[in-house]
Length: 335
Image (cartoon, rainbow, N blue to C red; front, top):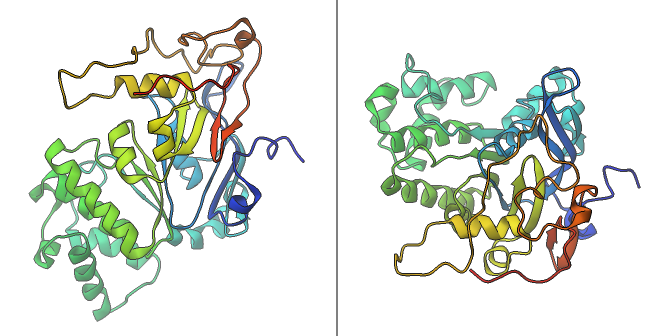
């Protein structure tokens, strides 16, 4: 087995049915001896109909991974398999027909919509690009999409500046759904919204997932949001995978010290509740000069001498639960 495939955190059965397979993904920015190592040796699978969460602090490589999966960015090396093809190696001409099946919802609903176009043209642009719903069917499809995301049909004649952030994000979701994709990358889709609006958009995504059978890579720094929407979670730190687990198992019993620290930092609605975990100390190291061995070792409360020289590989510590840590498999403190 080659080096890329040795560290695959999936059973053979899960791998066989995966819609998206990411193997040994790297993304470096800049040239020379000290590039920015945004993503380092990331591997995971996404099964049909699944919502996989991608979490970590700012700068951990979450959005970069999402863009590499869709080939909005070219990976430095690694593989992204979809439909029997490696997207990372496809030439632009061969990749274009697949764009219809692979879509994205961007984080900023204000910057992602062209302010000079009416909503009918923003959504219709995707239809025109792929030759879908021509003629009279075009207006009917746009009306259907607006209704699908909970917006009145007559909004099609308005411009983006006439809408709130939540309404704009619904329009962005409608645009992504216009071409009937199989897979969507949702890149922090509620991060720029008021808390009161976030729940509405999350409920919409959950409803659309169940109604349309969507498969999603959901990127977020908000652990509560991820717990609500995602089936499994990939935890990133400085471009590397620290832990992969079913959402329920991850929140109930985190196995990696970094996941433990993320949960400790998550706010609690009860101000009198005492946290059992201590938040992390220090800052995230620079991806230009990451620590040797385990990249988390400079902030880890359980650091060992071996952590400075050995890069931990993902190992299964419970069914479907993987961690990249040299520490003996002792369950960490409960939240």
